[in-house]
Length: 210
Image (cartoon, rainbow, N blue to C red; front, side, top):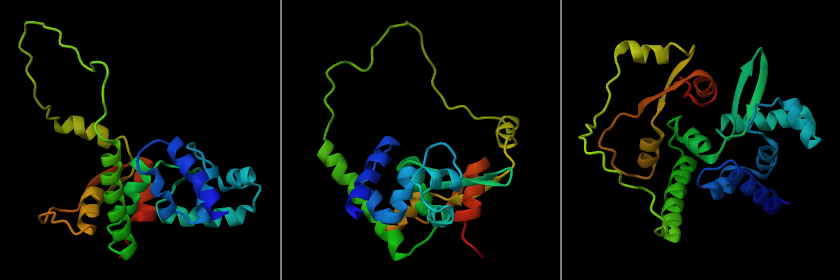
């Protein structure tokens, strides 16, 4: 049963796109995997999910809540109704594992597994042979100036003011490197900004409690 549900989990994670799908077995218990397989990319209530699975709503809600706390699914409320949503491994679950800034043995194991999987995947994949040109050079006989655009304060403010909730989280890339024992040269960790519903979720579920 466990092997079958994790195989189904792998196929579900593949359908959501993103790399590292085969690490799902390390992250999900068999019960969580089964619920994850019933989750949609569209927000659903616990009642919707339990009906789809033909299972008790309270039982499914309890599993969903644990998954949300572990960063294995997204959740938010709208009009006082709680919704849950399936997410891909990346972007999604990968970032959720490290944003809290934890340094448990499990955190270190996950960071190392992701790193080792990436190296093995790239080694097995090798250099992709391209049988056709992916770019074409079209002479225009003009000088094209390239440069970075620095947005004005008013432009940046317009983006920020669209959202009611703004959160600051741990840089998951630096945190993962730190957990692997790499020297991050005293770079700051709390540097990633999050906005809107994703900020609500992270503040509610993934922020470290004082």
